[in-house]
Image: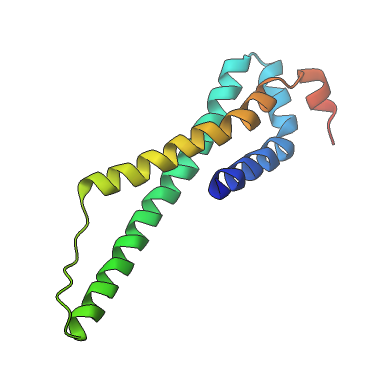
Length: 119
């Protein structure tokens, strides 16, 4: 949930910073679904990248812990299942979709004339 709130904040800041761009795109023909899809895709991309980096970091840390345990004489094998990788990336993607909907809808609802006047 904390990661989702972070994604939502990042996307809301992105919408605010790109208000004029959104207005310009709408003025030249982009519809609400184009804008919505753009911001949802960005949120999903950020969370999938974060999930992938998290899986790699978690696997590396798990490997180091297993090596340290073996060094100390414990029989602790390093294992990472494909299911856990799939689950971690899937959950991060779902978080991106859920917490990316509000900023994406906010961006898609902007009026072109007001967005172009935004400073």
